[in-house]
Structure formats: structure tokens, C-alpha cells
Image (cartoon, rainbow, N blue to C red; front, top):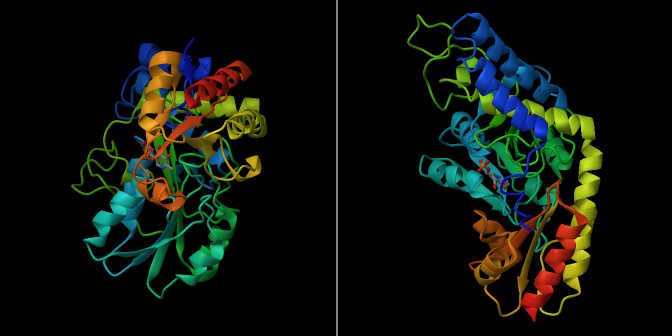
Length: 379
Ligand SMILES: Cc1ncc(COP(=O)(O)O)c(C=O)c1O
């Protein structure tokens, strides 16, 4: 029996309705959305529109046209950072960020944009006051993750959003690990730009994601090309979403993403989180009693999402992950999880950790087998 515990990388399996939406789009409509003006093209355009509307209502986004489809959150974050920041600007971020944030910021530093990385605690907590202290006269943006992909720690976005609003600074949220699990309300949370990936807890296929950009922000497009609108002009249209969305969209993927969010709305966000956290708590309680196992992050379930990092004393995480995979068919993810700074923060750089991440379709049996297996490996 294969046990998939790598849902923080990509959720698997997906709800049946997601497979059906992707397959129906490929088989029944399949044309280029909105470009042709013919019946099939109108149908695919409607799928795009319905998903955009569903995203807007799910995250309380005032106008659905401000939702830009991307191929993942990495693309959305690149668009937000490279389109919004200019030479001379300063940006604030946390020490728990993924390379999707840190690498574009590194590149931007070479173009005259400075950054301050605010240190989080060993459990991955961010103190909002530490963000406020570092604000300078040229601070233009605060960018943080909502939940760490290494420790699962939830960062205080409501407080950070309030600080950003009070100081007139834009706030970009990387919701890769939280969208579909934790409530996000762009208006109440004062989020100016929201980056989400489709293939994790939103249950969409890989190759989907979006960036919400609030009206009035001065953001340049990341890519230019055909939009099916204003085609007489050599320049990109100046209106949402076309300004930011050149090239043919991933319509089957977007249909799947819409079905994924619809599934969450039907099951209930809270029910999904409660089930995942029940299983996560079971893992933490099981692992913490095994001699030689060290768990990272807070042990309080309300502080985290369903991501657990651990190590076994004297054993390389790569070795542990390999045994889990080869001998027991348990899929985990080992190493630095594309977040070296987060590992520096919790003290596990450069070897990293073994990460197990629960999804909605995991069972109590999966968890019991994992705990027994880790006990065997720990000896
Ligand atoms: C916190 C965080 N940010 C960004 C990403 C990048 O996601 P994607 O590869 O879908 O762009 C991930 C994925 O692991 C993540 O966990």
C-alpha cells in the first residue's frame, strides 16, 4: 500500500470532480478561450470566468477581473515583486520564506532594491513588532508566507496587514501552504497582492495558480503578448486582467482548479482543516514519544498547518526518506524544501529534515503505519 505524505509539495489524490472537469474540458470544449468568438471558444471562456468568480468569492476579492491566472505561485510572486518594486525601494520579508520569494528578491537586490529579512523564532514564529521596527522611509512592500512549508508555522497575517495599512506599505502574501486550509479575506486581512498556487490545498492540477492585484497598485506586466483584446496595438492593454495575462491560458487546469475550490466550498474549509489537523496531531503525538526523534516547530496544532518536519538522531534525513520510500512505500520529502533560510532559522541547515505533510484524503491507518515505521527506523 502506497502512503502519500507529500501534500505540501502537491496534493494527491484530487477530488473526482477535478479529474472530471479537466477531462471534460479537454474532450468536450478544448478550444482557445475567448479568442475565436465561436461557440466552443465562448464555452472555454465561460469556464475561465466561472473559476475567476469562484476565486474572488472564496478570498473576498472585490472584483474578479483583478485575478490573474499564473502557472503556479512562483510566477505570481515574480510578477508581483518584479512588477511592483523599483530601484531605490526597500522590501521587508521573514526568515521563513521559500525560494519563490528569496530568489527574485536576490535578483532585485542587484537592480538597486534593498531588503531586510526579519528573523523568526526557532519554531518559525514571526513577531509583527519586529516587522514594524524595520520599516524605513523607502519601504514599499512587505512580503511573507502565510504558513511555513518546513515547520507548518502560521504567520500573523492579520497583524502584518494592519501594520502595512497603517504605514501605507503594500502587503504581498504567499499563500502556497494556506489557501484552501486557512481562511483568507483580502479585504479584512489588508492584502494588496495575494499569490496562490493551484496544485496544493486548492486541489487543482499542476500548472495552475493566480495572483490577485488590488486596484490602484502600479504593477508592470511580467510577460507581453497576445491577449485577444486591443490587437491593433503593439502595446499590452491597460486593463485587468489582460494587462498581465498574455498567451493562451491553461483552460483544462483552470477548470480543474475551479472544481477544486468548489469541492472545498462543499466540504467546508473548517472541516478540511479539522480533519487534517486531527491526523497531524496524531503524527506529532506518535513521533514525539519515539526515542531519538526530534520534531520541529510548535507542538500546538492551532499554530500550524498539516506540515511536520522531523529528524532521527544520528540518521541523515535523505537516508530516512529513502528507507520510507523504498522499503515502506511512504512518500515524504527530505532536505531543504526550497527554503534554506527557514532551515537556518530552525537550526537544521544544511542537512534539512524529513517532512511529512498530511492531505484531506489520508487516513488514520496511514498515520499509524507511518508512526510504526519511524519507530522501526529509529531502532
Ligand atoms: C511557501 C511556499 N511558497 C512557494 C512555493 C512554490 O510553489 P509553486 O512551485 O507551486 O510555485 C511553495 C511550494 O512548495 C511553498 O511551499
